[in-house]
Image 1 (cartoon, rainbow, N blue to C red):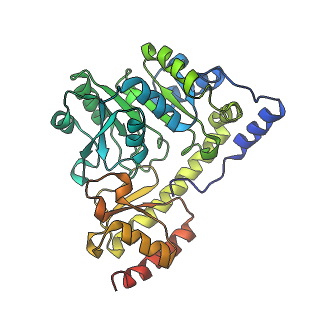
Image 2 (image 1 turned 135 degrees about the vertical axis):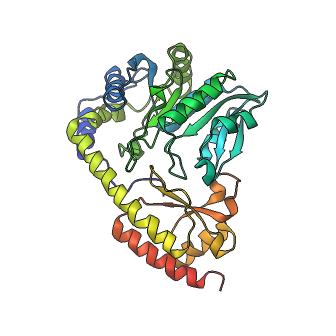
Image 3 (image 1 turned 30 degrees about the vertical axis):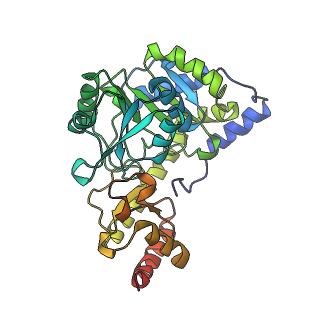
Length: 352
């Protein structure tokens, strides 16, 4: 569903095999391999034009490890982050784990499914400590541009709040390049991952960029929560930043773009409402009001009768969840074409 169908690129596999053969199987420092943090820093310099001290980068077990560190540091029991609804479900689950809360802010097509300064002002209260946003977002694929990130940062700083940005789907954008919040706010916290653009889902590797004054406490948390990210994966990930590997990633991005350009009009033609064209990730968030019924039952109908899987909106929050579903274009074009044919057939029997 939310996992690319491409296997890990061969240069990364080769580097991983070499690391295993060389016996690089022991713990690393909690912050991660110095050479990997330097490579990530160089990636930010080349792609975004920002200078990030490698000391501010912590390599984590997946993007989830970065979220665990940031939430554990920043959210005390009973305090909360503002989160867009709909949004990635694990964000609110992590907050519950640390005895914090998710203040879900309803967003729709008019806000392009993203938080903005006006929504921050309307929903901020005495227990608010910050906001977590995703750009590109899951499940909607929408972006926050540079000016929007800057405005959101200013709105939070005016309230002594912090900004955490999930940039896990950076690199997977179509017709536009994503801006990093670090271009406009050097004090923001950034969550990222080797899973999506870099195609290393099962290797469990990500990173967190944090303000310098937060690093020491984050390092202590890492030492206690997971000791270190997988060492073999870290050595393998060094190959991600080689020119030939980046070219593979760009070819895959182009393929995702072709899939989006096929699936978006195909679903609209069938009657699905997709009010905001996604600019990134690999999801389409669709309104099924035209077909009637509940999203959960709708998804179950297609899974059981047509063997096509998509996700009901209730997985992503409460706001208008009962009549929305998420499609993932993480399969090949021929399989997507087959899925559309089956959806068309399934619509004829839905509600019959």
